[in-house]
Length: 616
Ligand code: ADP
Ligand code: MG
Image (cartoon, rainbow, N blue to C red):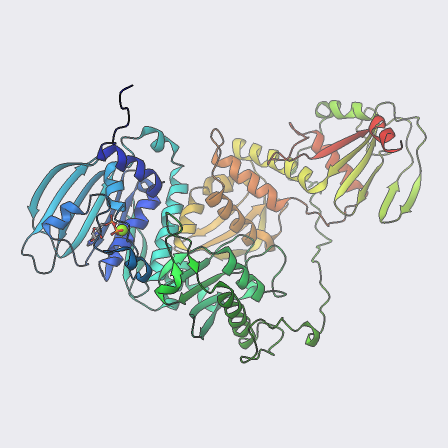
């Protein structure tokens, strides 16, 4: 048999390698911004069109390249940053693999203009799919401009795989944040589709954070600072009161490089222990400096994870330092931190007076209340919609039923006398046996046995269908606020919110103003509390950012799901009997009562057979 192994041509090898380096437009943004930083630029401009699908351009005033380097930089493993394997352990640059430009040039139309300080004249190169189309001299200022157009033009499958523009833009902004936060001493600008998204002057860390996340952030920052032999830490954590339900601003930088570290994240979370409401996440901007020799950056292809030699010590010091800072700023209840003690000393609960946890319950809030006058925000009870579930109860009428109220250990059983006719001409709630278990499930006896309904998921289903309907027919019911609520959002968040403004209005939001970093709201959907508005919008934003709509599903769907999740009655809330019944009525008026918007089961049925089996 003849030999069959062949070396792949370079452009094919580059295309394959590109798959690792370039997953989406944001990957290109990261590589180009990092190259500009490595070139010692003091001012960097990022220009993006159509979420990077049409154009990504980075203009820097760094050291530029000679005409030969300008050509070489597109070769694979061409780098000026390391020369031998030993250099890997003493890295001071972001890049070192020499792969990025070769990969990008393999899958896009790339144009490079560059000039060094010393050169009289610069170079202009055009490359398409790894092929050099032209190389000319050009009159350009010192520095480099790299333009990447039509990303994935020769890999349609990858191009089609890209998400919607808001999602891809979000990824780009995330990368931009990471680089801009890591280098506050460099000026950055970002322009998307012709308008300024960020204009960040040279500054310190605090100013950089505020310039990115909005002026309101300033008052939320608690400084963190510590230096030991193995690590130097500085930066900020967000006051626990501003912790968010969504993982918002969580940034670790190690030697000016953004990294992800679940382990160190845990250390921060541990420092916040006892200070945060359940289900919220701390925010932080922490800058660690360690000797380059003590870390290994090489373990992840996109280089966001690194390995520390002395992970445990860093963990302990980070936790202790943050705890100390929170204490110093009178945020932690205890201030008995002793710097000389071992960092591992457990938090001294013994000296702390125990605080009884409280649960906030708004007893006046009744999500099932029908409004009089105005059109009800809830799906009205319709006879025809309930026929399917009425049949569940047929035959129950004459069976022996308990009356009055009984209390079984831990379970509250409340039942009215069963009337002879469960559902007469007029839908009647009377006589249906329902009770709530652990403020979480509603149990109802049905003809064939019993039905257990998850109250939170059931309400999600009801709200979801209702919200979707309101968005489609554009008739959400709004409750007017006496005083408009003013909410601050960072520019990109506001931009993202802008993409769903219309849908929000259809659900009942009324915006009185919509400015730079502020929106005013003077109407909210019926059924939500004014105090929850900020949390709900934050949640919606975070869902929009992270929950990419599945193919075939619209942004409406993501929004309806998200709002339903935040608005639905929570587990842990006690419900009156009428409310329980109302929930069941509404649930069975839904198109798909048995699954939640996220496809979780809303109810389970236990028939006599299932019960019989339990008694064998
Ligand atoms: P790496 O950054 O890993 O070295 P790249 O493919 O990103 O690999 O870049 C290859 C080389 O091109 C770099 O080592 C650098 O010498 C040069 N280069 C890339 N971008 C710039 C820039 N903006 N300014 C100056 N030189 C650059
Ligand atoms: Mg690079």
